[in-house]
Length: 356
Image (cartoon, rainbow, N blue to C red; front, side):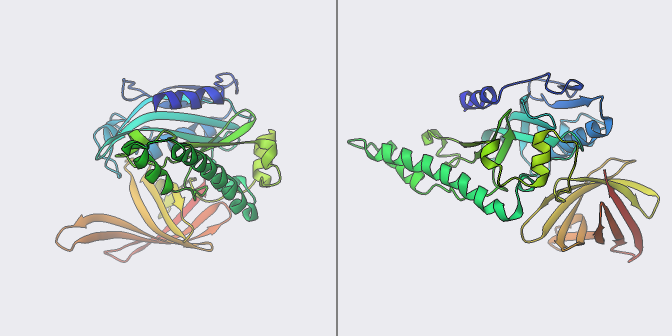
């Protein structure tokens, strides 16, 4: 796996002078198991702050500026996903002018230790995380997904043919054949990683094997790449401006965006919108800027209306999460305006947020 990781990084072309005023150092305290990037972007401190906030909240569940070691939760398995996570290295990849792509390599230990390589891509004009779906015209998303699926399936089918052509098939090869015949290849843009290269975009789809079968999986992750020109007829206006180096920014989706505002007009908060699912499922985390502790919101978005719940704690006696607050709000341009209701007192407090 490590050799394949190094291959990914090498083919991307490393560049530390792509954007002259952008520098990346290591988050302190750096140790052998906690090597994590911190962006410095003197040309645009706002963008710098957004990228660092996103990375640290998203990956470490740590709010920049909070007390304590930023790696305490991930290294102790105390994050919301309960895995022990170690970060071993990062790389800044060579990209078009408007884009920052960072590769993060590490290991997560749940039931089993599992190495990972993930990519995070940011728009350097705004500091926003780049969602894959925003890159393509709405009516072209399925077409692009089919192009990716077709290449993954071909790689698997070609390798299957090779395995089946062997004489006197061993038990190991028979196990490989069974694994690849059942391989999931219907990946969508929500399912896969991706990053920008100098003149290509690369999508990385998950492997065919589970952890127990990984030693048999000679293909490992599936890398599908397209020169930018090859996808020209599918790019959204946002992607075309992004890739061309244009300073014109376009509206993008709500997923993975940061908002700042107040509850009751006097309690400053920051919100990170997380993933929004096709069925309208919605999740976010927020924190009061004063005490910097993450609080989860979960619910749905329908059209421009958002309905969320804020849980307080899990009651073993009641066998359910006990509610702390209810949020009803509407998207109005780059703002989210509504109410936060205390579940116990039923008191309503105004909620007003604006995209950072």
